[in-house]
Image (tube, rainbow, N blue to C red; front, side, top):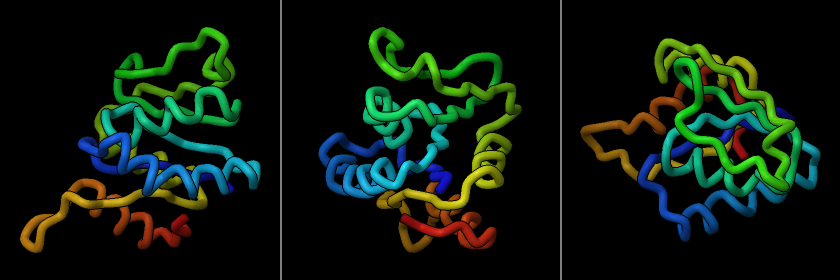
Length: 133
């Protein structure tokens, strides 16, 4: 399993613990590898959660360097793969979807008249046949 984890930028720590951690724990137990970007909210909370749990993380970022990475001191971050140079968030997200087999995301920002970026990315994952966790 190659799991792409993403979600809303305004995700709280409490909501992350409730909505993401149980699935992340199952993925760790299943020896999954992870793909995570480096935007605020779900991305940074996931990176922090993974930093002492697995070496098998690929961080995708726009431009020359990530906007955020956890501390490498006494963590597993120094063994992570950092892949950058993407021209836009959309290009980066599409690359993540191409590389993954499964996705983990929760959307709570969409409204009846407006789909959030997370909702659009989940729809694209569905189009590509990526399994949801």
